[in-house]
Image 1 (cartoon, rainbow, N blue to C red):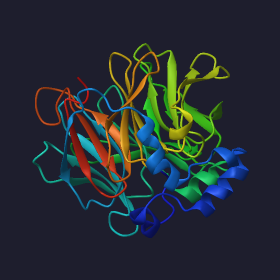
Image 2 (tube, rainbow, N blue to C red):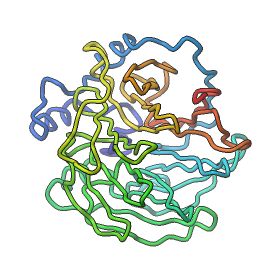
Image 3 (cartoon, helix red, strand yellow):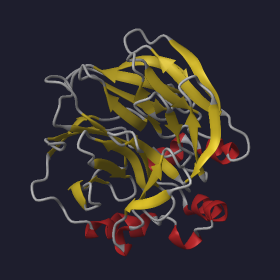
Image 4 (cartoon, one colour):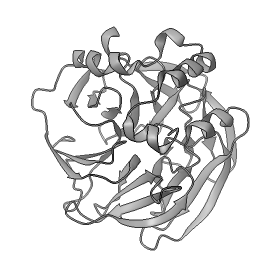
Length: 326
C-alpha cells in the first residue's frame, strides 16, 4: 500500500528516485533503498512455487488501488485513491462477476482495511506521501468506521502518522503503519492513540498472527524484509523473513496472514506475490503483475471464496489467484 505522491506518478510506476533519495535521509538506509530497475529483475531470484495458482484479472481501470480485504460473506472491499479525480473511495464487489460499487466516497487518501468484531470496516485515511512525511512530526491521518452494507461512516481515531497499513488484533487493538516514516502506531480498543509505539522503518502492510502474540510488518523503502514485533514488548523487533540479496529491492507492500500463520505479501516494484511459510521460506506465487499493492484471503463457500487470493494493484487491476491460499 504505497503512499501515493500524485495521481500521474501513481499511474506511471513506482516512486521516483528523487523521493527515494529523500527517504535515505529519513531512514538512514540510502544503500538499501528500492531501485525500481534492479527490483523488477532481481526478484526473479525468489523461486516459483511448485504448483503456482491460476492467475486471472477480474477488473481493470479502477484507478490507483491501495488495499483489499474479504469479509466472512465473501465480499471484496478495496480502496481506490483519486476515485473522483481528487479524493478516494472504498468500493465493494459482492462476487467476482459483479460490478464494483462505491461504498463510501470523498475520503482523503484511503489506506489500510480491517474489520472490527461487529463487522464494521476500519479504514485508514491520510495514506499519502506528504501525509506520511508530515506524520513523522504531526499526525494528520486517522481511522474511519464504515458500515459495509450502507456505507454510513464516522471518524473513530485521529492523530496517526499515516494509516497506510492497518491490522487488528484479537483483543480489538489496532496497528497502523507509515511507509514514509520510522514507526508503527497503536490504537487501543477504546480509541486511545499511542504514536511511535514500535520502531520499524518504512513499515507498510501489517498482519497480526493467529495467536495475537506478534505483529508482522512488510518494509517497502528499506531492504525487502518482514519484521516481527512482539506485541507485549514492542522493543523486541526481529527480522522474520528476508529474501537473498538480489531480491532485496523488491518493494514489499501489502500483507495478509492465514489461520496457519502463512504470510502473503505483494512486491509492487517486482510485480510479484510471495508466500512466506512459518519457517521463513519465501516462494513466489505469481509474477508479472502490474504493481500489486495488497492481497486479501478469500472467505466462505461463494463470492471471493475460501482457498483463493485476491490482489489489487496500483495500476487499477483486481486479480484472482485461484487456489493461492490452499
